[in-house]
Image 1 (cartoon, rainbow, N blue to C red):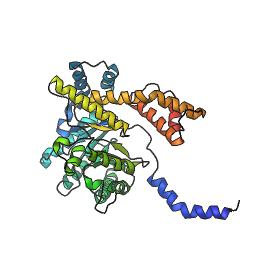
Image 2 (image 1 turned 135 degrees about the vertical axis):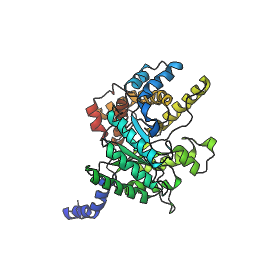
Image 3 (image 1 turned 30 degrees about the vertical axis):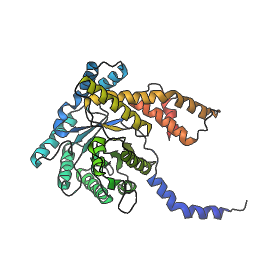
Image 4 (image 1 turned 180 degrees about the vertical axis):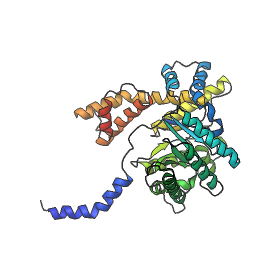
Length: 377
């Protein structure tokens, strides 16, 4: 052996800055539960959000389903992640009207109970809506300071994200919150948020500009499609333009701890029996498609979308459960499975089973949860 301790030390020094960069920029997947969906409800229609489970169950009764596990989920936890919407779903109102809607929404949430995850979508930081966005967030915080996430829509560049970081810091100081309390999701609704004018992947720069405050990247199906020039009849979560944008998002977010969410379908299961069944079939297929592509979260816009959200999600995890358990057992026992699994694959298998447990799709993951948590690190 010809290398000395000095050689080792020299390389350690040379790469120390890069080591620190990797540790801060790519800390790995964030531990803890990720919701399988986000339900967006306009702020002025928030009063009945606790009825969504009953409304979803009623839809299943009108069109009989045999899925008792889905009914149980709807009775226990119909909404996993609630977003009070002050943006497109709410529209433009007078300041007095929106102020009142903010206070009312905060009061409803404070009265409880609330879903496991909650948040607010403010208006964008574009010039026309910037002041209203800031006012809404400030007013909401004055009435509600339990854990919540902020959704920042129509982000087009790093300056908006940096400004959001500054805003969060000032609000934390003003309300006496611990540093880092306020986190936000970035909505990818514009092609400029994916590919910049200089040819770089803007979305990666957005994550960097967030300074650790970015909780997730959410794809906005219809704003993005429209901005890309796609005709309304062909705007969809599965359009090639959507797949490209989401592939760039996925690459940018990998190992950063920033979670991904697919968008929504606006084909709602309402109307005639044929229309309801057609919309359910579409939603089920799109949810399954997103899961297979590594997008474990999506948007739901109507109570009748909840049955297919959970039916597709449960089927996805149950279909893959036995194979994942078998591969993990063989990996742990170092047996010849015919598949040369590496540690990274073992982490993915464990994470898959943990997701199934978290959403209720699985009650038995084949391995103790504590073992899965160790394997998933």
